[in-house]
Image (cartoon, rainbow, N blue to C red; front, side):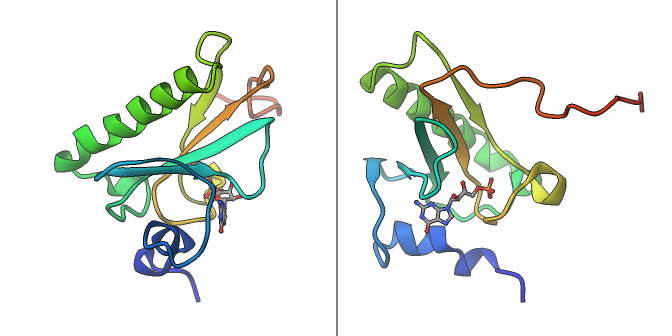
Length: 125
Ligand code: 5GP
């Protein structure tokens, strides 16, 4: 059975029912290290409000989603990688590679990130 948003592991992390390496917390958002890092620095910034995917962002959530990027930038500055740069990305649904259905911003840093993410021959729409 697929996970509903109220059942995701991230809700349990927000509620402190399971441990996480928490880097930042305020009333709107939480940032914590990714359990399976894909870069020397890899953490997630999530809204405390459960939003399933990018597609489920409502008009009232626009400031909240901007806040996630602000938290990412604050942490980049605090941990000294703001100037050298980083990747901040949200995956959406299957083709985007989303596995946890609670909106989250990946922040990856500490090495140069590859681009583009898709290497096959491209067709125009
Ligand atoms: P997605 O694939 O949905 O874009 O990213 C989900 C991320 O959540 C993955 O990078 C995965 O490693 C991370 N993740 C999954 N379960 C846990 C967990 O229990 N704790 C932490 N800290 N990260 C998790």
